[in-house]
Length: 355
Image (cartoon, rainbow, N blue to C red; front, side, top):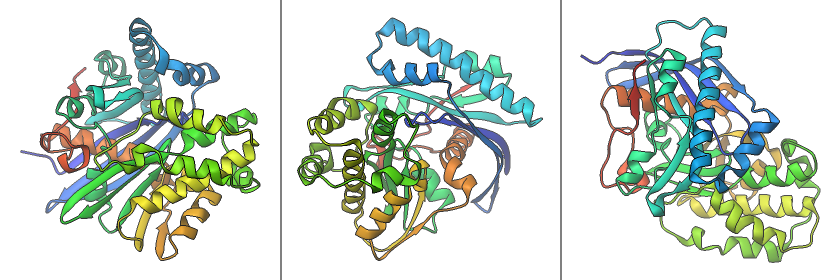
């Protein structure tokens, strides 16, 4: 008999490299309706060595990736164990962990999230549900985005759910089918240029706001092949490294101009991605703190109500939903949607390790 209450931790590390998000979640299911409480939550920042390593790991050899996976699994396990100890958490049903994406090449039948080795369960002394993307890719899917089933279950009152993280993605209902896809790179690019100014990120978009828009660069970005593709579609850091940055670097303009032009590009691609230009859009992820980016999206979508939720949901929504994906996996229920990823069928993705 399936339970109606789950006590779990959701763990997420995004491509923007701001750290490991951990959220202690309580789920309740009553009459097939889910509710949740986000309890203790925090982000554990990476040190400078880990940030540097994760940035260049896309170019690692196979043997280097194996070693990195082992080391990162140990790091992640220690972060999780410290979180459990710090908050005196007991009687957990599972730790549900995404890991950290290094390679994402669904067109080649391959995706790699490090931190999902079996020893993570032993090291944390917890049941761990993880590695949610691999099975979907093996079934012909994009392996991403996986969050939309959580949008449907937990946030159905909004017309759209959008995340502004390392990449932007959106999900919505269309003809009783959940549709979702990645839109463009966001903080992976904005942070790259903020880093060149000695900053971790462009706080509130203050620097971007001071630039000028380079129309030639904006037009070149807007006609990229990826944006013309039909969903399902997803992006990895390879897209940034091999396509976006080389284009921007061809333009001898200031960093401020690059930031403003790219911010405008993000906003335009979001507008083009939405089938209806009115309604409500729940906006989460680090990019929701970028006031200038939000202003540009609102400028292009004057009839859209942009909803920025409480800090816990804004910052920990992905950790929350990966916690839900883990619970669905434990229950043997669908947690990956064919309509979203393009896999052969809906399925229950991920692996379960018992300590």
